[in-house]
Length: 349
Image 1: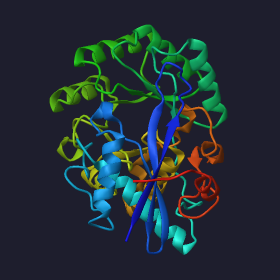
Image 2 (image 1 turned 90 degrees about the vertical axis):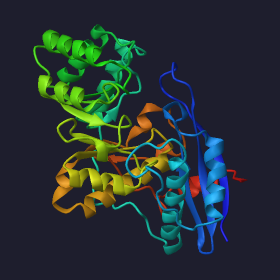
Image 3 (image 1 turned 135 degrees about the horizontal axis):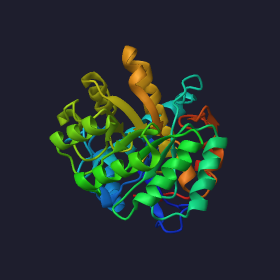
Image 4 (image 1 turned 30 degrees about the vertical axis):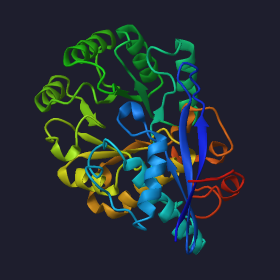
């Protein structure tokens, strides 16, 4: 018989203009011991709220021990419950490793990352952005990711692009489908004119609501890669329209990444901008993908798992160390954090 507890947490963004992020660590008790997971839904991107996810976990555990992916969660951000399903899958996997007294993270398999800038283009000063770029450089990152929205001006994007390029970074621009085709085209033409070329632009992510033909046209016009996150199920996207599939283990089964690789896409594994325990689950899933993808492993490109730099530090993130921008194992068993998890107060669901 399984039992379920949760610990509510808040993450404090470095950017004071961004609200606190909320989620819950879960603790699952089975016949063999405890396992831990992280549930970090984004209701603003169609996930059901945290309270719903926690209630759903209790219902799932009452019926099955190892939930299988359901609905479209293997391929696309679902409308309801994948955060709950994947948190339970994480906890059950973590619990087996803790019972065996072993770590899940392999210290010999690196998963390089980009640096997720805590300041979007439009809600951070030039000084703050440049200081973060310098920090990313000191930490050894070679790729940075900026958020761009409908309020970001060409001047702001161009300045950040130029500053990052001047420090030797490749740049990823994530637009969260907040712009139109013509706004993205105008932005890229402006960047191209002001900076002479787009050689520092690695890719643009979810530039506008998905339209296969318009995505293909944008690729052809500028010769730059396009990454797909939540705008469309990757198994429905033609390879002529995009290049990279974003894989988020916090809401997707690893089958989604395997399908993307087999179809010809590159895969970028990212966190949910969630708790460090969730980051290490994403890291473990990325390592699993690298180990099982055979000759396709070269298409598992630097990800966005080291996302804790977007927040102020805490007792969990203080344990995270990098090697070549890849997270290193944290002391303990399972996903680690044995002492920190033991110090938390847990509430039964």
